[in-house]
Length: 347
Image (cartoon, rainbow, N blue to C red; front, side, top):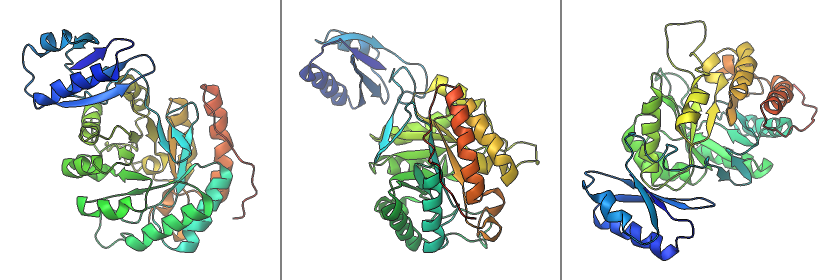
């Protein structure tokens, strides 16, 4: 259910509605736009006459019952597209945002060197895994806290905000101290206890699409975060599991415009995990921007052939620097922009 307040409704009138909703044991979530405020009501059961009770309150224009399961992430609740500020980066605006960096933090030298190179080529944020969920328990699983400390050092050196993955509720406090954005990986996309706890942590969350997730399931996963009072969720399409083995995953490019029609949340594409092969990453990156994605997450490594994880899908510095002007050209063609810094990058 959403309660649409009248234009010019006072703060006192809005607060009265919120208080009434909470008296009934329901959740109230505010969406304050330029012209009017919307109060989203979540929880169950909704009293059968609740809409009639609320419509008589001063300042209320209309009460609408929503049949969609995803309420906070849908357009009914928020008629404006969500924009998320991460330090000096605005995600979801007119500018395409590129996040780049290594799959795993391996050393201080590797991470800081990569951060400098991707910033010079146009990236606005740094990615890097300190805790890595791996298919095999015998593969490199990250440096843990030391990896977080290295990411913080790279941020200090370059000014790039940091995004890194959190795997369990027990890790949230530690990761919170170092990251600017929590990343929830595909394997944890339906770990609802983790999603709820991250929702309470007060930082933006990038939610990757699960291996076989339907779009409604993806938005319902976002609802777990948002229902805890955190509206700052970024969706990331990273390819889904299909019958086709030619790529690591199958990039669902159609998911970008479809999910944008369903939700006001920013949408990113991760061409690296979709491709699994370095040569395919540029084409999938350009396809994602052409489809309307708000940003890209791309794996970059100083020496991919020696990477401890995902080297086969990681770009070199020179390959990444060559790709960003092409991303800028496609972004411009679809009415977006991307600042690209001319830089000479040594391989």
